[in-house]
Figure 1: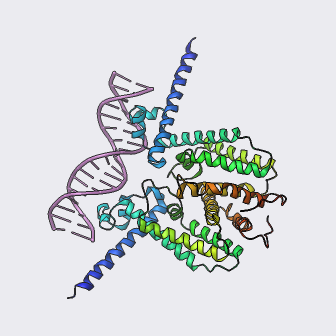
Figure 2: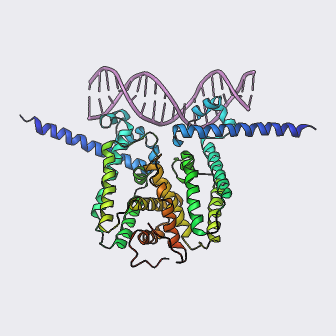
Figure 3: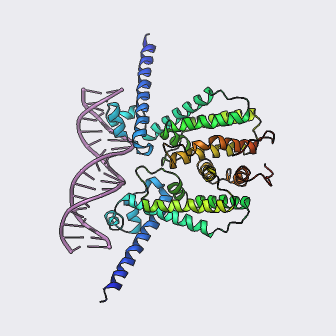
Length: 202
Length: 202
DNA sequence: GTCTATATTTGGATAGAC
DNA sequence: GTCTATCCAAATATAGAC
């Protein structure tokens, strides 16, 4: 029975094509805007007819969903690759810088993962679980450093995404809010850490 | 020459219809999502053919632009109606609460004014000037209370919109980030004010 | 798995009669 | 100022031949 390897080859080829389509979808989102993703143009770029995409994705939202999942996988990998120092203040600064790098490296990815802007798109439970895992990872790193009060995590996510959002929306390509990262990290640290070794402020 | 009053009547009627269309556009944005605004549906709601809208607005983006301008007018009026107390901490809290009320009262308005999500839409210079005026108003209220350092305003906008954004995106209808407003205001005040009369923290 | 063909809807926008 | 008539382009999606 030599059927199994054949199935494997077909399955592998299938998932390769899926990956190729996803790559093209990201590139298209970067060129035309996330919301302007179109199946016609996407198919053209991968050398297919638009209808053939339905062999790989059941709908346009299924493509968004796969993009969402892949984006959060990358986000998780990025977090896990960071070597956060034990010192809370240093770790906070490093975390904010890592977030900025990740977001600014791919704006549509940032938009898809951290904003809710595509009308009618909701991530599937499986994809959303990845987002939850990423948040739990951050919560664990904070807790290791004594930051575990109610609201501590939520305040940090608000501060972090707020900085990124202002940077992206109001000074794209510039550094107006990038220059506030360390300052913001210290402000947060001063407020959630036990009041020893306060920062120097501005 | 009784021509002038007739022109006035026509002009008034014209701007009345414009306002009516804008009202319907806001309502449609609330129902279908800001990005899903469609001229067909909009015309249906005001009892017109879609083509007739072009008598009042030269393009779809012109409608977005008028919405943008009206939204910032409302925002400015809201700010000017607030009676901010002299105490910086109290004023900061009140300002954040006012922003939250304004944003949560109309989510598409928040999206249009404070996020950049409509592909291809850029506010006209005239409309954008309103946004600048609103920011300058906030800067002036801060400066009156001794908050005028470089980056102080930018940090506040990041913190404020971050809180709103998290609330809207991740807990719509809830109060998870609303409960952090006063805490966040104090954190900001502690960092940006001369170090007298610190808050009690958490 | 990919194609042709097609359905179906919708989008924004223009020309010209009335 | 509003309409009819139309245009044109594009959208997502399905059926069925090969």
